[in-house]
Structure formats: structure tokens, C-alpha cells
Image 1 (tube, rainbow, N blue to C red):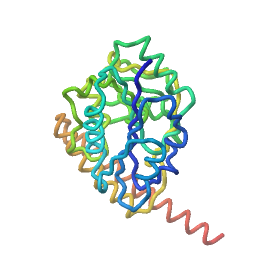
Image 2 (cartoon, one colour):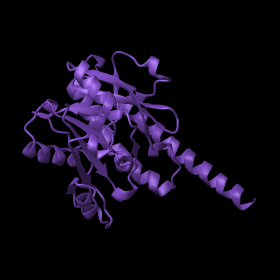
Image 3 (cartoon, one colour):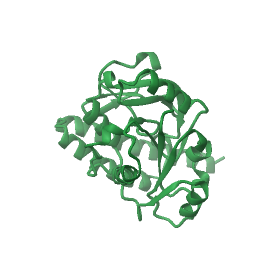
Image 4 (cartoon, helix red, strand yellow):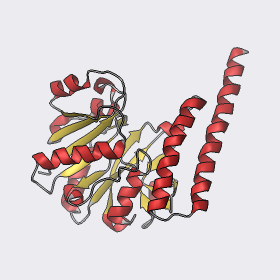
Length: 270
């Protein structure tokens, strides 16, 4: 039987309200680790204890890479089985009944792979796997269009053989964005030869598709900007491509703000 460990990183979310934990059947996995990046008071430590989860408070929002690294250090201190599969999840991914069944089958039948990723959909369509060229990511229109090279995937739903982390930890200069793309580039160089896509579908509440207040979006943009700067510097992505990405993101933010303002005005006028 495949030894499966689940990592869930939560941010300002009660474990009771986590879509991931609401839809997770703990009987299908060996252990559940929760890293809490929350900046508000909650009762997550007690809730985790009641559920039998291992709980790690990050004492505030220290970023995704640091949370993963702390979880990995804790896991390596407790588990010796290097064939263990580590499943990464955000706190708002809806799990399906067959996710772990399909993962176990993929691991047994295709043990030559290091990384296993499901199909993940969001409010727009197929979110992951996705394509990547330099630092530019793009969606495939459907599952059949997924290329053999230059593919990437989001963290949530990704399953990784524990042996991948023997001499690897996440780059903590990346706070939130491009953590997944950097990991896959480092481990597989974005090659499908090392990534097995197993046949199950998850739904992710992708926040980038939601309309948010301008101040909130700009604050989020500052994090994105720092991460993309570090990613491009590390992998020698051209400054022109970096500026294209940042300009596109910023244009989208201000366009969204205009739409929000016009929508609000129409609602006020009836």
C-alpha cells in the first residue's frame, strides 16, 4: 500500500472552513500535516488536534516556500520510508472521491515518474497542467492539447515522491508566486518525461479570477512583482519578458477596478 502524506497550507482560514479538509477523507492517507500561515487569531491548533492532524504554526504569514520547507523538515524527522508520496494542497481545493485511488494506481503502474499531477479546473477552465515559456505561463484549452515539453502545474493537487526532497528545499526567496514553476523546473526541467498526469479532476478556487478592491489587488501585485523578479533573475529570463508579464498583470488590475466601479454605479442607479 502506498504511504501517502498530505500537506495543507492555510492562510487566515479556519480548518472547519477549508474546502480541502472538508472534502479530505483522512482514512485514505497516512498522515495530514497543516502549516498555518494565518495572521489572525483562530482555533486551528485545537481543531487540528481534534482531527488527528499534525499542526505547525508559522507565527504569521511567512510565505509558501518556508511553510513547505518546515513541513518537509518535520516529515523527514518522523518518516523513514523514502517511497512516501507527498500531496500538496491549498486550503480551498475540492477533493474528489477518486483522487487518492487514481494516485495510488498511477504510482504503482508508473513508478518511474517522480511527480504526479491531476487535472485542475477553476472558474475559467483548465488551470493545471499549464504551459510555460520562460516565465510566461498559459492555459491549454483542453486536456488533449497538453504538450510533451514546457509544461508546469500548480502546487495544489501535486503529488511528489519523497525522494525528490533528499537534497532539495524550496527557494525561500519566492514568497508565493512561481514556487510551483520553480520546483518543477529544478526537478524536471518542465519535461513531461518526469511528470505523470493521472486521470482525475479537481476544482480550485483560483483567486486571480475574482474581482477584488484595488488596494487589495495592488498589495497582491507587490508580492507577485517581487516573486517574478526573483524567478527571472534565478533562471535568467529576459527583462523584456518580465516587464511584459508585470505590465499585463497591472493592466488587468486597473481594468478590473474600472469594471468594479462601473458595476457599482449601475447597481446604485438601479
